[in-house]
Length: 150
Length: 141
Picture 1 (cartoon, rainbow over the protein chains, first blue to last red):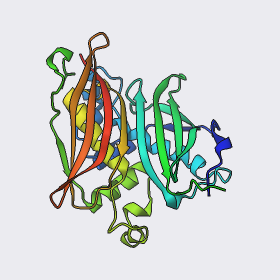
Picture 2 (picture 1 turned 45 degrees about the horizontal axis):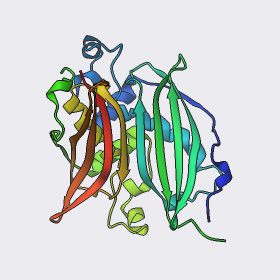
Picture 3 (picture 1 turned 90 degrees about the vertical axis):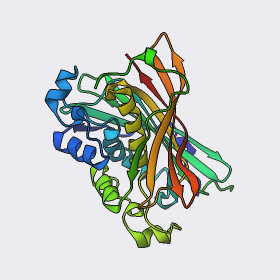
Picture 4 (picture 1 turned 180 degrees about the vertical axis):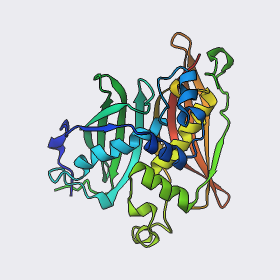
């Protein structure tokens, strides 16, 4: 069943999380990131950062949590069993550090069909406590074979 | 490690490859760390029921290794400005994931370098690209 194209541009509820040291270490371990800037606040400060850094793709965690609202939106009509992750893009303005309070606001940036597949683009702008953009994530999900004709 | 100097980089330079043998425990650890508990990455029976011979790694797990190849080369994770990847093949357990990149172009004024990046796997003698047609941008010293 095709996706509902009228949801293009729909914005969802914001999600706020604090970047905690334990989660940063867990994420660094999971991707084999052993760099001292991700593990040692003193090393990070010596390199000119305010705090221990989170790996660049650490924001995937909150992006997934925030975009669950989109994926589960009944009005959208997405069948998650048919979905594959097609593309992922990040635009960083600065690195995420431990202690950052980040707010992600997901929105449907685009919905389009190509051949039998449909493409859902979810954009999440992630801002810090001062309201400044830290990173923008763009996820393209491919809904396989759902671009039916009526 | 200090950030790599812009002037030391030339178009065509290859980034040192970053390799990883992907184990079930790694994928489980990534599921827990990222919160992506899709059974496709943990449950053999489920993976087979949707047409795969076995569980597969998360695309974002593969992407994280490409990012690491870039930031290790740049000498500073804060150098990374953007990345855009296309997921084009899956990665199975016990395969060796190799993240690679090369310098595509240089922007003198912004001291920024555009990289072509990809991930490859040798699958029984065939070179498969789980990430291809992808690029990253770094700002160098």
